[in-house]
Image 1 (cartoon, rainbow, N blue to C red):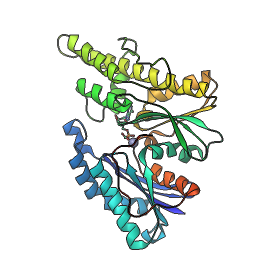
Image 2: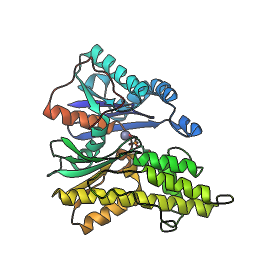
Image 3: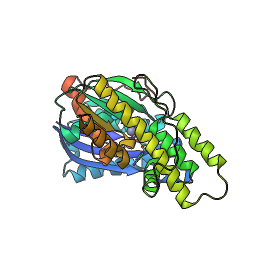
Length: 330
Ligand code: KG4
Ligand code: ZN
């Protein structure tokens, strides 16, 4: 079964072809235009998707040396995300399926992030604790090999990626903030400033707004111009605090719940410091660690097509009359 995946939930327009567990092509266009606004402007994002969607789908098909006719099924992100952006991908997918009679599969964005594990490692042998850390979500799931996910923890305020984006802005860095902070942090001392570790004593929930406020207060108390060295130290110390919390909760969940494997996906899981620490702590706790490559962690359509494939293994295609959703509780 050859699946065309389509992703337009935020500011990446993506198309990918996936066939029976194998990725044939994966094209992503990141909308650079939002940089100058310091964040994603929803209406601008929708218009950019509209411009990009047909060329991106053509490129995904060409890259796989495939044809439009060879596509057996379309998988599209239905939500959560920016509603205007989602509508562009969903409307295209519906039109394609209506015109060709091919089946449509609606994919949940958070579950599509988890599918990155299956593309990279195949079907896991046992249930695993999966951290999904992105711009809008910070969730901890227990995922069964059949791709069913049970939520065990989530953020009570900001998402991890959102805190990277906000702190980057405070430091005068560009959007998206994650890669910018990572770059600055590489030049700084992670122990320079002792920012709070918002670790809730019980359970596996997260909270990042206190950490963001601590950075704000620290910035306000400082005097004079922000030197390059000070910026790098703040970035490194902030990143260290986020990594500490994400790693501790993920490893703790796996240990408490008797799981032998941890995984991390979503844009924040592209972060090198987080990946290194997860690997180190998993090793210490004798856990297996699954880290899909960074390009499958940030938003893309390969994960959408793979999630569609995994849904179809368990169930049937969806009705053509589906509607996108901006939020969802798991
Ligand atoms: O999963 P994603 O591409 O889109 C959403 O579903 O939100 O995640 C985007 C988020 C942004 O907040 C971005 O700053 C963050 O992931 N991010 C990173 C890195 N790359 C992207 N955060 C930390 N380090 C990175 N290298
Ligand atoms: Zn995402």
